[in-house]
Length: 310
Image 1: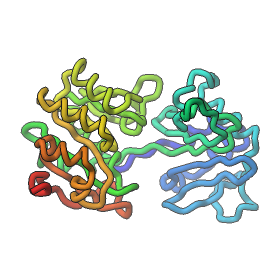
Image 2 (image 1 turned 30 degrees about the vertical axis):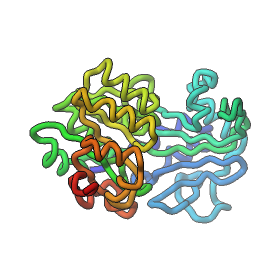
Image 3 (image 1 turned 135 degrees about the horizontal axis):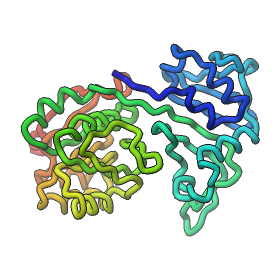
């Protein structure tokens, strides 16, 4: 079952003109909308089942840009200030990273002119575009693997899939299910699993799940092992050398790792030096390979990692 955020609740984040149109979107249409984009001087666009549509003043969806509501500079400024809780300076880190998580776990991507310092983005100015990504959870997509592989005791598992295959979707559901039985620490570097807003996870992540929101993975893994004594650590997009070293160092504590990585098959484990080292050390017991972007969040098969590296 997919639970999506009620997009009408986004209306206060828009100017009166755009907010009025958003509030009139029908429930039938809202169910299929994954993104709402504002671009200065251009029509408000919506991603609907992978296709781009435009928003009319009456809340309808159209392919005719001449019928659409157009976002101007004031509309962008109103929305930007609203997603920053009207305190832009308080969101310096999030702005430099290009996104802000708002109520309901919705993520707002920010496009503008970068202000750099020492080859790093310090902040953004002249905001020209905002992308409201509608949050949702697919309840039940991890039921089968949780019953089969985590019923008696926790194990370590890699979730392998290409872009848009639902790796994060699976991780969310694993946390929701296992978090009722095991102590879990989620290293949520980009805020995609817990979707923390003002310290409160907006996604259902389990009763015994702790969220390390915004922590770099390597530091978060080390911190979680040291201060929270988890039975399972969950993280998204494992692959960096520092991340893998932190995972390797956690082996002696007995903590299990559930992590995702990019790849079309389990053979991706062999092509990533850090993850291959983890696999050869016995860190991961299973690799769950996802179907792909045509069926996000669906597991194609599960293999023992030892059979992959032999």
